[in-house]
Image (cartoon, rainbow, N blue to C red; front, side, top):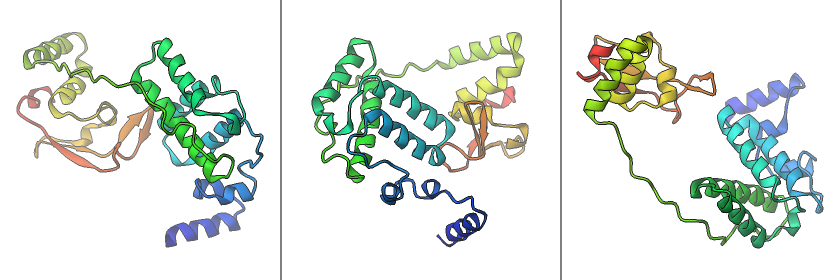
Length: 231
């Protein structure tokens, strides 16, 4: 908190202070005019405001996913915020279902709408969240179908012949469980053959290197004997 206070003081002095960057969910955003309090505001306008406030505090890939979902929603909710009812949300679910969207995709989009309406409630623009109580399609989880050891070895041998530069990539994925983006961010300096360890401290997302893992926690992975020949 002390460090944040010093940073804010520097930004105020430099005239670069942006309230919404530091206090994204503050109700004061309404009072200082960053978020509209117009009772006739449309869902489209408010959703874009909500998305704009999220940009400084989420990753590039997360914001890109949010933008896709907001685009999906505004195409179906061309109404004033205060006029949207649970029936409209059920209509969205039906539209997505009729167009072959998966239950997971439907859930993600409705969850996005729920968060936007929740913020609108906090801003005093609506009194109820139209997503509350709306039944979502059941998600049927498909059981995983991993490669067998024999299949993995066949793939690695084919890779050594056809694309040897990717063999280590495939092998690390097969024998460590490290996330794909984290494998893409690895350099040879992260691989300690003497200690038989791989240090994971960064990830690659949307072609951008992020100097932290997905969970924000660095970790070491063992180089097991099956992986060793491919490094």
